[in-house]
Image 1 (cartoon, each protein chain N blue to C red):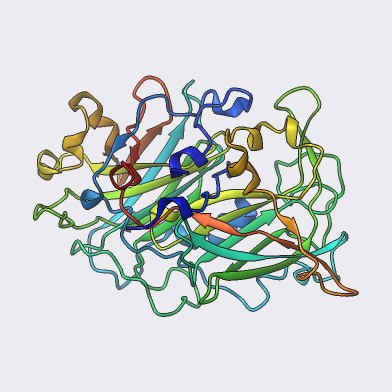
Image 2 (image 1 turned 90 degrees about the horizontal axis):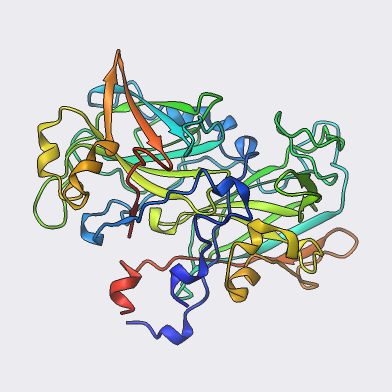
Length: 193
Length: 229
């Protein structure tokens, strides 16, 4: 237990702004290719589309995803930084959206992760979203349509039933598509700790 | 101060871009034991030897502008240092122009300044960048709107709980009162966290002015709501 009187004031968040790509995403396009040739698991393409409250595409968002490997384990923190990105499965990816508000990750379908209470989460990715107009980032999750484990997932169970669909990606051709609606009709569920 | 009180709201109409982009429904609280956001995570980006010196990235020589050093520590709310934490920065050039295709401000580009850098904190949470002082620039948020000069910071802590993207400002800037991005932070002590301090001890004689900018990320302790109740 810490003495709250000595707590430091946390640094406030500020928007990522519209001009981040040369700092965060362009040199790192490899960060969308999360699975290497030797990564075990089912290869998937995961397209994330971001929309504002008027239904317009958000062309200046940063999407960070974080997921378990195919066995349901999160990659640990390595002893040293990689020399180049994209060599091993790291469970972490980052892309900026394009003019259509879209970005696409190439990864593997995450395994089911044990929750703290002895259950298993349904296959999912965590999402951290930054954008111009977001003074602080927001968190959401991506699940997969048709997964029989959805009904057992303890986090989905916290979400009112009529809003659970906002957390589910659907297969369109050979890509899973997840629509992230920041506001309004069909607003995506966002999470806090 | 509880973490939540130090942060800006999602919706802040004076910053117009929040109006259609701020989520309007209440967030759903995830108990810490269900959450992946507290698991160890790591910004898996390689760091090159000169990545923290933005003044040596140009093929044609040093960039235009006032050379500065930005240095500080990254700690959590309990004052514990955050070692080996990835810090990424990006900024305008000295004239207030970003190296970005969508930046149409009619100020000159500098071929010797890309404005992006990256480093990692040391074992005590310390970091240093060498760069040039960025410029103010106009935007269209409201009539005659200008952003105060700032450097964007992205901090990758030990988990998504400590993830932070923010902006560093320079002391005494007359543009602060009209900047809705900075003013979105209600508490003046929290706002002050974003203003760097001129530091003569960091200043290198005959070379560069020093600014100190310490960052405080969210504490590692589960949910503040439970612990601080």
